[in-house]
Image 1 (cartoon, rainbow, N blue to C red):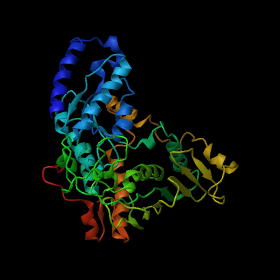
Image 2: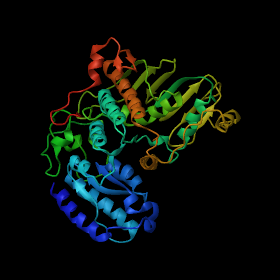
Image 3: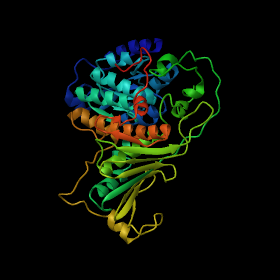
Image 4: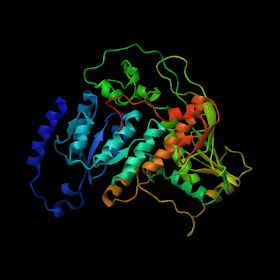
Length: 453
């Protein structure tokens, strides 16, 4: 709290001294201070510095005016991160970023137009709901939620508001991976015939050692960090490294805070699969599969797995670490494989599935999408797309409902892993059919003081 209050007081004075009361728009054009989108960043750890804040800082028509973190050590370094970026851009010292140790203070700031939510997964839905209710547009890191019920609450709250929410599903943008758009457009236009099956390659996570209780660092509001999840003793391996914002944090491997790789990376690939399958607003009707889970140690998310889903139109999806990381669309006239690390590859149905491209592949890959066919909307990098939508009050490439459906499908695969049985699902009511035990897994108890409502 002390950091937030001290910095905020100092910065308000500095800002008043730095700019005259009225600045003609002609002086600055589209990037005039009065026309900039003022952004608050909630969570300023690894993903925020390496991706969310980093991408927003590229754009002159947006300005990160405040940061928030429950760890005051990270909060202070987050302030320095943003200040240093603007100092480097302008070629002079900058200390104008405000800091908050409580997200509610940031949301109450009427100068802030929109927020980045770059927190652990278990905080996503709650913060998004509170942000849109506070009148802020939101860029929400994937996955959309910890549970399907939370995701539905989030999507409904966005729909009830006039706010814009973009899910961080950056594989949709033309930057940095335009191959995903190309693959989905080819599939949607029948270049591999009738789509029958999608294979998604995702790794599992390794188990870890036991971790003894440790004193809670004075700089961390650990109770608020746990949020809606149950009380659990503090150990650094459960939370995030105290002396690094680069290392992968331990919470990613704890089911209390997320579901593991099935949502962590799966939210990206399932979203792309749904884009190509034309199932972005629905979900499967049947799910089954198996997974190995650790039998000891602190980290308990899934390891090796293979899960399956069937959709109402007969298409099937299989997700497993047995496949190469990426999305493979399989039709009755060929297949297309797309991944972050390379271009789109394709084959005719009779050819080996791993080999250099040949003429038949080039025919698929170089195919022109003609007028009258399905042209999927091309969008810039995901944060730029969000900023453009804030300005125009237009569409984003991955809105709340689409992000929720991708996340909920991942969580359905996770539920199949946990139950080990075949599950039937109604994507309209978002309930399991004839399975009370599975329906009990659609939500989790929310700790008093930290519920979404």
